[in-house]
Amino acid sequence: MFESVVVFAALHQWLTFGPVPLPEQVAEGKRLYAQGKGIERTLKDSRSVIGVWFDGRVKDDVESIIWVSPGMASRWLGYLEAQSKWPKSETQRRWDAIRGQVRGRLCFVIRLSAMPRLVGLDMESEGKPTTVDIDNPSFRLTSGPGYSFPRNKMLDRFLRTTKTPSYPQTLSITLPLPDPVAPVESFELAHWQSRDRFRLDRYQWYQDLPLAISFLKPGQEIELDPGYGLGDYGSKWFWVSFDPAQLHACAGGFEVWIATANKERVGSFRF
Image 1 (cartoon, one colour):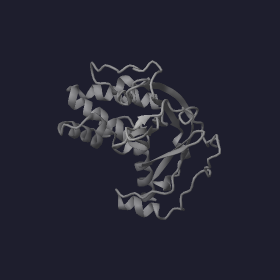
Image 2 (cartoon, helix red, strand yellow):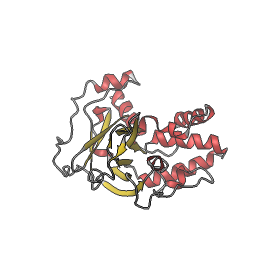
Image 3 (spheres, one colour):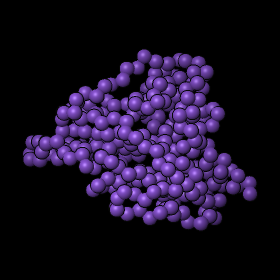
Image 4 (tube, one colour):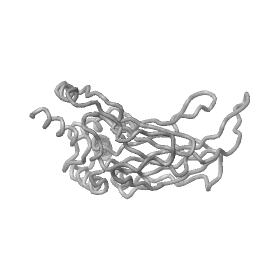
């Protein structure tokens, strides 16, 4: 009985925004700032890469899922507190604002991209690619194939006594995805098109969200859409949220599935 209480208390902390930021994660954000790391390093395992693009030399991450998790938000605010030298009351104020926007749901910012095919020895673009695999995506939350709890032996021992986790519903490439147990809330944040692929990377994942002010540092300017709908490189960003009640506690993690007309992507997250 005691072990089950510990498990569910831990799950609640990892999934749900409590009244205050997580102290150890705030401290981690401050440590990353002190080490001279960029603020994106605070995303850690709350960011899952779901697509890469080869430019002829290296593979770059061009599609990703960012989970606006309690741990990530705590690290981000800890970093900003150390960087901006603001009082703890400002960190708490921003945390309260994020908590109010999230409303107890699992929330994500998802980037999907349409990149041109490069051909020939000079790796020239074949032209603007189709957007069929970034348009009208379907989103699905599953409990995942079963993750372990490497951080705590008690949790791991308890979870091994539960039944094998399974998907709430088997997924197939048939579109759209089956209706989830709880409603999915999603909307498009932005669609950028550019002749310069690197301009797309300047988009701040939080800039078009109602809670953007909570993630901005004082005086920070937002990059505006540079492409005017022109160029061979394009990305779309989506805000997606789920009711966490549909997750199986024994899974120790979950997956976010994204399906478009010709493509399936999946991002995995551990608690």
